[in-house]
Length: 544
Image 1 (spheres, one colour):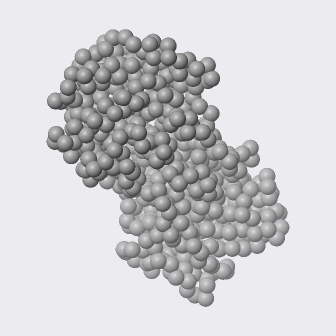
Image 2: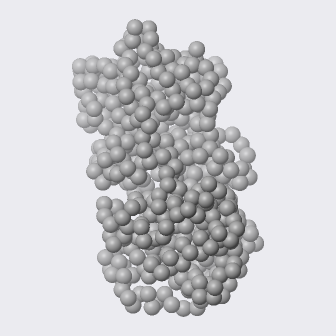
Image 3: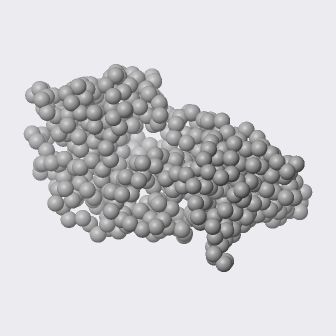
């Protein structure tokens, strides 16, 4: 079964055994029967338009997801060919926007055919397909694009559609509070709120959804506007959901709650802070870079102007920006398993761009390539930071989450003669090696130079490795008898990384940005010995 296959290896589900038994019972489907609407009161506006190229692919029987195309002649192919993440996307129906932007009878009939096929296969409760977040996304997209696909349909399709909308809304009202905390809960509640706005005589769904969403926002959005997962992709997707809900309420002439306005106002500057020079996001804690054009549009639709936040005292990211150079540092301990199951052991790692070109990166993340790849990309070695004895700075659980090893991070920031200075320290290696990692970063006022120093303070450990993973568009060459590396990005001026007192090496690396396959690249490696005395390495990045 699709649901059984996809729930294998997943975290403990949102449902208890009794709840699963209840929902799976044939009797439960009868409890979903009730009043069926014959119309919608209105449809929410689209925040983002679809992709015409992806829409054309759907017309030819393929679904575009993260740069790749997968067969989608109908929903029968899903169990054997698609990953869990892709199944979430497919059953959520956000791709209806891609058909909508193509427009015309052919696109409309294709949408009708796929919805009808889904109704014939999955209109009874299913552990995965009716998961609260997937059901919420599906309802939100069916309601948003209703006017596009519902014209010139036969009576039977229309009746079956409204019956399903009523049944799914009724179930979601019962199950939304069971969604896993985080983005899943917000997507579930978005669907419930849309049903409350659009389905006649469903004000109770609206009131319930807004009440639960306020509680989720209070728990998930930190005072500085960051998301508790510390995953920039979650941050962006959450902001998009709040903006869509805001616009849906406004279109229905419903007064906006003050808490919703406040959440959006806090999230926008924080989201801007997590962008690199190319406009895409930094890659921390399971997040991908995303598409800069989409991020531009989301931020523009917020109608909130202003500069990026430089300091995030609660989310614990720091941004250095001068001239055309941008750097974002992970200055916090990894989030808990409750807030981010797939958090990374990348403490004190940073990413850096010059102009629109990325220079220093982390290796990225994936949900498409299996657990082994997902775990490998969570390791400390997959980040631009220090590794001691090939050991992660945070213990990684085999099925997600972090081990019991304690981990705290301290950070101070100051400005000296126009130069931004960060001093951060982490005790992730304290319990294993009696070592503290301190990192010092200072960016010049014009952004053409970054001075760095990594210190390991303590008596344990044997060897360390400082890693600087390079973006695939950067060409790297060893110079100065192995004490420096010349970096040539695709565009713009070159850079040089120098470690005057230590050997510098170039090794192979990989990078995953948005696609589901790795790109070959290189990493700068500075190795050294600790030998019970600690270690200190100075390095600098300078534009040439």
